[in-house]
Every structure is written in C-alpha cells, then in structure tokens.
Amino acid sequence: MPAPRVAAIHDLSGFGRCSLTIVIPALSAMGIQCCPLPTAYLSTHTGGFEGNTFLDMTDQMAPVSAHWQSLGLRFDAIYTGFMGSREQIALSGEFIRAFRREGTIAVVDPVLGDHGRAYRTCTPEMCRGMGELAELADVITPNRTEAALLLGWPYEAVRLDDADLCRHWAGLLSLDRRRSVVLKGVSLEPGRVGAVCLDRETGRADFVSAPLAPGQFHGTGDLFASVLTGALVKGISLPEAARLAADFTALAARRTAEQDIPRREGVDFEPLLGVLGAMTAPEERGGGPR
Ligand code: PXL
Image (cartoon, rainbow, N blue to C red; front, side):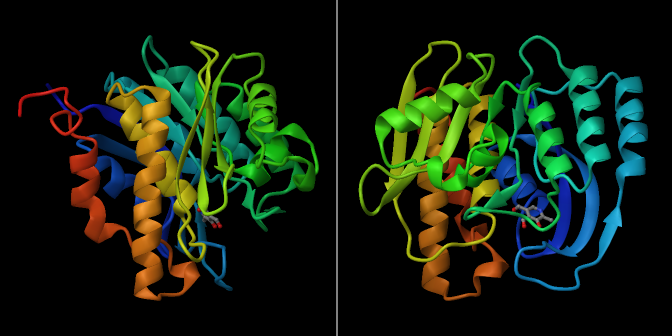
C-alpha cells in the first residue's frame, strides 16, 4: 500500500521548532507522505524571538494549488495551521474546497494564541477568518486560548478543569456536531493534562490525558496536532488518535525538560521520532503481522 498523503499548509520557521519543522518529521516518522505548502518563511517563530524575518509566500499558494490540481493529486488529509494573513486563510479555504474528496480529512489547527493571549500576529480580523476556515474542518484542535477566541468568550470563562464544562465547550465548538473537536489543555486532575475529544459521528466525548511535564515548550500544540492528524489518516479512531498525541507530546515535553534548553527553542523531539513510528505502527497496535 502506498504511503497515505497529507497536504500541510503551515509556515516554515527556520529555527525554534514549530509548524513545518514539526509537521514534516512527525508525519514522515509515522509513514505518511507530507506535501508541504509553506505559507511563509520566517527565520524563527514569533514566540520569544525579536526581529524575525518574514517572507510572505501568499502569492505562491494559488499557483501551487493549481499545479497540484493539474497533476490530479489526491490527499488523504489536508492539515492547516499557523496563518500569516487573512488572505492566506481564505486561500487555505479554497484549497480545502478544491481538494476535498470523499474520505479526505480536513484538520484545521486554529493557531491563534496560547496562555490566554493571542499571538502578536493574530488580529481580530485574523481570528474571525480562522473561525471561517474552521467551519470547513472535519476536526479542529484548539487550545483553551483558541477556544475562547473562536467562541468569543473571555479566556477565564473557558475553564477546562471540570468534565461537564469541557463537554459544554466542546459541544459549542462542534457547531452542532458538524465537526469533531479535540480541545487541548484539559486538566481534570492535578499533574495531568490532555484533551476532550468530541466525535461528531458518535456524539461521544472522551477524555485523554498524560502526565504534565515540568515547564512549557513552544510547539507542543503543533506536535499534538501533527500526531493526531497522522493517526487519523492511518485510520485510528479520534479518541485513540488523541491519546497517542497526548502520550507522545508528554514524552517529548519530558525529554525537553531534561535537556534544559530555552523554552523558545521548542520541543526536543527528534531523538524520539523512532518511538513515534513504533507507537503508531499497525503491528505495535495489534493490527498487523507481528
Ligand atoms: O507554534 C505556533 C506558531 C507557528 N508558526 C509561527 C509562530 C507560532 C507561534 O508563535 O510564531 C510563525
């Protein structure tokens, strides 16, 4: 069987590990072909570095899409993340419309902010646009900050420390179950963090969690969403995909904490990519030859 194929619409940040520098290795390690459509090239990400360069690649997005359409390319998933402008959000929506087929999974990670604050590049107009893009998604993966921004609620109100409240927010974010929701940053017990997963097919809300690592590292949201996307493309169920994403992200965060590197340098996950491949391999999961 050929490798499943994912179109990944994210920025490429040279240093600091986020977006495509996480998406590509994570999907590759899971045996998935990643076709990147970079929206911008930055010298570093914008969280914790000053003076980063920003090469806007918006004008490449439609021609790349047109070329891929002329080649008749098909994707098992379309996975979008950080956006540099309102126009990029609109073009990503057009890409999803153009390439969506029966069985294609559209995963929109509505990267807008963290820790109660919007990223400095995310204007209110960008937040509105991201909401529109997320309407095209089969699965969205917001954190608590992004959930608040998408729902138009204050961050403090979107508490994720109570199961009923988590179900409530996930329900609102699902737009009457038109899309599945993996809402990250849920913590129902001290020392553990994870997600609530509302599956639009079954209507079930499942909780997954993993031990909370000391410290917080840039790019953990991108790593979680990448592993989740890869697992979904491999046919793994939503709660199981979220469990794998939570477990691997926790493992990478723990390793990073042990390395004592600055938070802005992101998750030190590369030495663990073999583990990721094994965790998501069919034979490890009891589904293939041993
Ligand atoms: O990890 C999210 C992200 C992605 N891409 C860029 C960013 C950020 C968060 O700061 O700056 C360029």
